[in-house]
Image (spheres, rainbow, N blue to C red):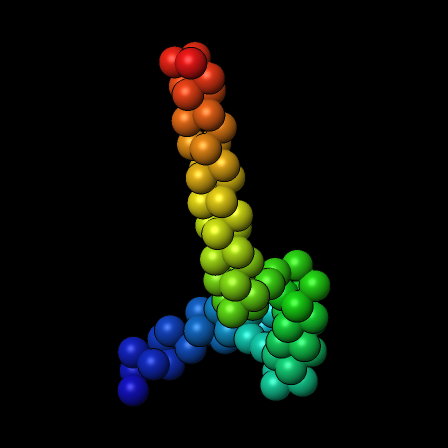
Length: 82
C-alpha cells in the first residue's frame, strides 16, 4: 500500500496526460469514426467480388487478343511462304 501511495501522483499525472491526448475513445466517437471509415472505403475501394469479376473479364480479353495475334502471325507466315 505504501508503494501505491508513493507512486499515486505519477499515476494521476500519467492518466491525465493520456486523457488530454485523447488516447481513450468514447463509444460515440468510435461510432462516428467507424461510419466515416466505412464511407471512405465504399468511395475509394471496390468489393472483392467486383474485382475478381473484372479480373476474370480482363484475362479473357487478353486471351482473345493473344489468340488474334497468333492468327495474324500465322497468316503472315502463310503469305510469306506462298
